[in-house]
Amino acid sequence: MDDFDQKILQALQQNARQSVSNIAMQVNLSRSAVSERIKRLEESGEIQGYQVILRQPEQQIHAWFEVRHTGFCGEIVDQVMALGGVRECYGISGDLDMLIKAEAASLTKIEQLRAKINAIPAVKQVITHVVLREWKA
Image 1 (cartoon, rainbow, N blue to C red):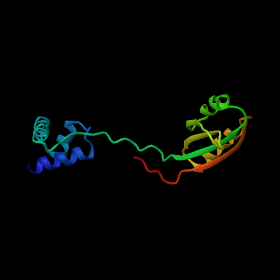
Image 2: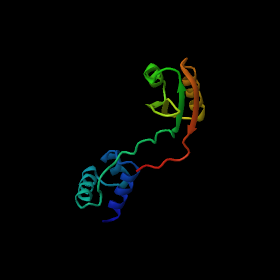
Image 3: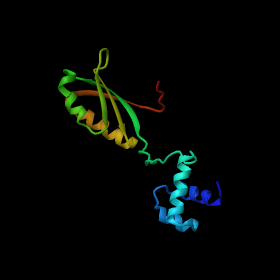
Image 4: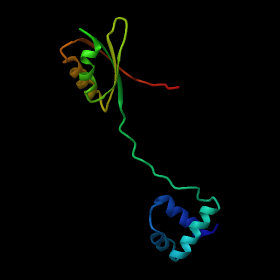
């Protein structure tokens, strides 16, 4: 690998989607010479592939809502699931009636979601648990 190959690799690392013509201008070689060198670098394994780097999604805040209500879960589940940010909803046994998994872009949005859940007429109590850390198997 010579200096031209090094310059071609640097150009590709900066922007792998740029045209061969653009790279040729940067390294002072003809388009055909650059094209042949790129092909050789790919075949030799020096260039192992190209990738797309996606923008990272906004950090989401996760929360669980414990809900006590009058009646049956089936009577309010459609209203709850229609709320933006609600990801899962569970009717459970025990002291609680429903457990809701939610996510939002901010604590303010979590608070707004809690208020919407609390505004459902059959809901008696909502307790919020904000997830501070998560472990997955």
